[in-house]
Image (tube, rainbow, N blue to C red; front, side):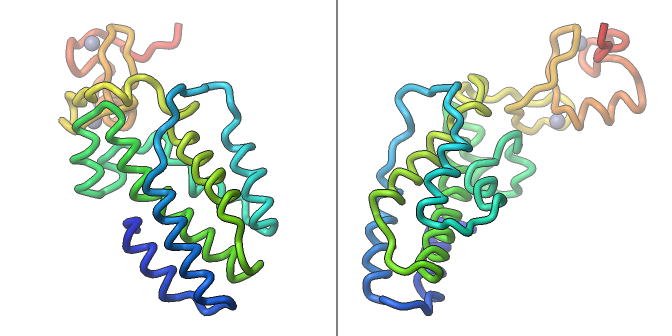
Length: 203
Ligand SMILES: [Zn+2]
Ligand SMILES: [Zn+2]
């Protein structure tokens, strides 16, 4: 769900206590979330999942482990898997635009959903903790699962001609989407580009 649309929905659907406080909180939280900047230094050793889990436990002790996955685990999605024109368009720009698009499309919506759930279950929420949580999610989008390739202009897979952020490298040095390559290998055990034999041999 697109973030702005999600925000409106969670605002309208709320039927818990402290309605006007809730609206104030969500409106401020949205401004903060939209103003968050990516980390200047991407620390690949920080366990962002653990950090997100700790913060989420503070505000929503009864959260589900899937809640953490939903806010951070977009790893290995190629733009074509996401089936969003917006993401595909952004992804083709490279230089982190893909991550920003995923953050906007999925992570922000999930944060609004979780904040709304926390209000319904536990009443008024602490904006400082939610801000830390949102920043941890944004950092998590950039950390560990996002190698340098994502920040370049992505290659195009020469089999399906779609942008490719996670190339599967062959021994001859060519890259393809893993799924595209496997389909080709079912037909012929050669590199689709240079026809070198047995391109994924393990030894
Ligand atoms: Zn492909
Ligand atoms: Zn090759």
